[in-house]
Image (cartoon, rainbow, N blue to C red; front, side):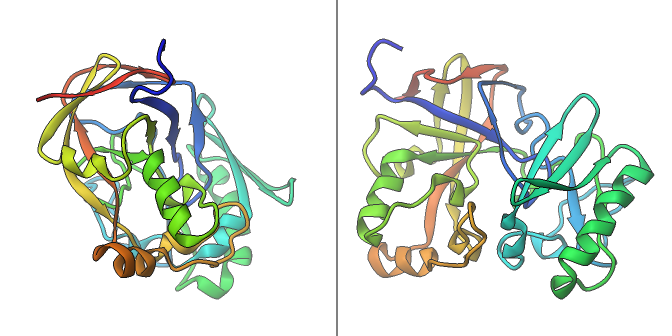
Amino acid sequence: MTDPTAPHVTALYRYPVKGLTPERMEAVNLAPGETVPGDRAWAIENGPGRFNPDEPKHLPKINFLMLMRNERLATLETRFESVSQTLTVLRSGKQVARGQLSTKLGRSMIEQFLAAYMKDDLRGAPHIVEAPGHSFSDVALKCVHIVNLASVREISRVAGRPIDPLRFRPNIIIDGIAAWSEFNWIDKRIAIGDVALDVFTRTQRCDATNVDPATGNRDMAIPALLMRTYGHTDFGVYATVASAGRIMLDDPVTVSP
């Protein structure tokens, strides 16, 4: 990228297991109508669940362990190895659990740890679930989540403290556009690198954003701050992938007229 002040990509993320640590990426290949590959491919049912891997359907996030209600998850660091499908869980830098999620034994190793560590939040034994091609996103439509770094800086200014963009669980972080101007993209097509995306809605924020992703402390009231300051609780936008391609760090971002 020749002009660092022009609209561009500053970070790319996916979340292999819903509610757990994001994985930073240097590049991502996107396909029409799909999510970031491997994004929220796994989830942890909170007790007896309704998810059927043979007939996967979108379910409300309250069926699963997630940051909105289970901030203790943020005190864990997780690493996911895509080739082996192995999840490693660390606490204060030390490994506390490890298992291959594609095997019953591997899932059981992680579930046993979570049953003890998250016992005060559980409605029953936790179960790690997945289905090929399914994404446990907060929205039913397969899409990507985009956050504007200028908007993060602006709400940080209003809050009087730095706010980690990862509170908003983005797939793509962009910079080089004015704060809140991403809201003008609704029902428009944007191009990031050689990928076309159709922006379809603003993201309504929940109490998950109140949790510090580094410490697990519920130390802010971001939806309340947004409502009090701007009259809404929206932050970030969702977009569907309209054409296949590859997005890399520093790729330019353009908006169709």
